[in-house]
Each structure stands twice: as C-alpha cells, then as structure tokens.
Image 1 (cartoon, one colour):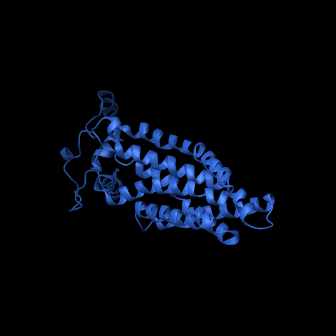
Image 2 (tube, one colour; image 1 turned 45 degrees about the horizontal axis):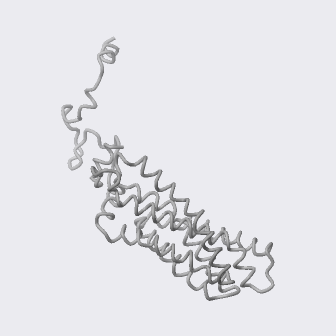
Length: 250
C-alpha cells in the first residue's frame, strides 16, 4: 500500500496522525451525514402519520418501504454516473440535493412533504460509501487506522435521532423537527465543498483515480512501448533467493 501511495503521488502524508485534518474532516462529515440519514428514516413513519391526514402507522410504514426503494434507485444511478463523472462531483450534487429537498419537508404537509422526503432519500444513497472512499485517499501508512475513524463515525446514527425526537416533542411536530437533520446535512456539506474546491483535498482524491499500478506496464517504456533492458526492471526481478536459483538450475 505504501508503494502504491508513493507511485500515485497522492500527497501521502509524512505528518503525524493527529495532523491528518482531511481524515478528521471526513470523519466529521460521516458522523453528521449518517446521523441525519438515520434520523430521517427513524422518524419517517411519525412524519407521514402526522402530516398526511388519515394515514395509519402501517400505511406510513409501507410508504417508508417505497422511500427505501428510492434510496436503492439513487444508489444504482449514482454508481452509473460515477463511470463518467468524478465521484467528488457526484457527491457534491447528491449531498446538495439532500439539503435542498429536506428543507421543504419542514413546512410542507401531506403528499408534498412526504415526496420531499422520498427525493431526500434518493440523494442520500451514495453519500456514505463516497465519504469513506474520498476520506481515505492519500493516507498512506495511516489507511487502516483512518478507515477505522471514518467507519466509526457512523455513531452519529445514535446521536442525531434522539436530538430530532427532543425537537419533535418540544415543537409538537415531527415536520418542524426535520430542521435537525437538515443542519447536520449542512455540516457534512462542508466536506463536499472542501474535496471539490480546496487543492489539499482535491489533488489526493483525483490522483488515485488517474494512476495505473500493476504489472501491465512493468519493464516497458510507456512512450515507445518497447521492452526495457533487464537492468531497468527494478530490484524485484533480481530478488531471487539462492534456493530459487538452485531450483531453476536443476
């Protein structure tokens, strides 16, 4: 992994772990995003039964199933788009969509408000795995520990839903309490802006997608396509042990 990071020129950090601010920003974004996602899903039934007249909890649960279907569609659509567009741009658009469409659900009621939550779940779909992937770019020797920080940040899902519940009780309305996950979406949005517009974030994110590491071009001149002399293939080819050489002679 260290060799791969060096070859990609992806700003592999030589700084101490506590100075990996990009990692900690990604972990913060994961905490906020996951908390908002879980809060919306957890209170979706309450929202629909309160704002849509005559809707029972079992019916609202079926609407939730439909919203999860929108989430799945968004995931497949996002993966397809990422074949042609940089993931960081798709991430920015999707997380921006979460903010744009959760906002009307605070004031709208009935089918309109519920539809806004459907679209919000659609745009939530690719955010979690994309934060993980982008946050780990360029960490080098800190990749294992860094992935633990980002994945551990899902504990936001245990923090934000109770806050939404407290707000719903205080306001007497689950709809008005949707401002809580919206605020956490905005906090996570700061990372999507940084990874797209700050070079210190953007360059490591892009370099890993632009490089080619493997055995495909080993020992070949990239410009001419000709075979390089044996001495240029690196120490790996000549790292045979005496036992291997003796076996080869036999």
